[in-house]
Length: 212
Image (cartoon, rainbow, N blue to C red; front, side, top):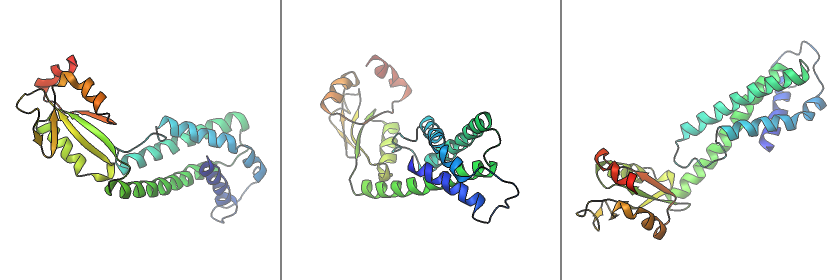
């Protein structure tokens, strides 16, 4: 909310005081822009919530999160255009409205990128971890486990595979124990609480998961 308010003020300064744009007609005074700051912040909060930017993005790439930020700021611009048009008509500068989402997107990208870099460094050191269980232990499941292991920035550690095949249960595959059968998944989860469950079964094994 504070970042949105500061970005709104910065957009005003860029439009009228930075010397970038020519001021050809009189616009609303600065006080008028301050008065609608709560409306601007509300639009940002709504757009960011709709884009799920207030939820953890541990399993998403930086590009996916940045894309969501850009889309959320585009939605913010549309909301501001609608609100200012119907409530205030031409009282507010269109250039300020256009500058604001660009400034706010830049601030969000820098802040979230910095936070993500800090979290990635912590997770790579084994801190701020979340734990996962993979249903299946075949090639698909091993591929999923390998991808997780190769991306320590996610901060996810696989604690077990769960499989139906007797010859697999009790063994260790790629350093990860195999438990089972799949029908005991509720019990396994009760005894081993995890944050994520990945289903990586061959199509021929899907019936086992559906019966669980």
